[in-house]
Length: 219
Image 1 (cartoon, rainbow, N blue to C red):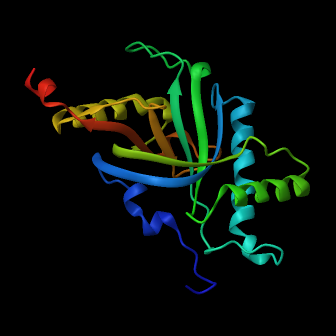
Image 2: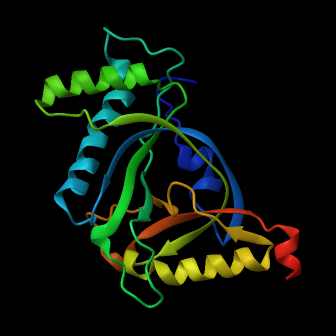
């Protein structure tokens, strides 16, 4: 690979970023920079979490320009889109507005497999010195979603319930059942929701599933 070529996961692994319909997919273990928290996305703590991820991601992606560090197996890469894992402290009632203040989230950016915890700690330290900012909340995590259904949601986050209903219907018809892990679902933000208008947003949705046990199918 030449120095001018950057790996772009959106192009090399399109199946995880551009579903054309509702489909079943197995998501392997991947490496992430993460920040965990709770509360509404409009809250300052959520915005600060996003703002803390990008400097670390870019510090790692641009590390090849530095002479004081050599990352084993490094290759140049395009910083992937922001992602989020979401659940809630309470289960919303049918037709009840989502209580955004009760949301629990893990906001994150995928990293190449060569990114270790030691590299993340180096990037945090270097970036903190440069920006005079605390990045202690940024963590290195490996996350495996496993068996999921996914689809593309177009439009406002407030309308996601309609897409989730279609996903649940698809799962039932195809012999799967939705399951809740540590989180209810994953979102991959192909649009910058801080800048784009709600109706133009494109968000990949993942929900965890398992094959429906035979005894349930027979009921």
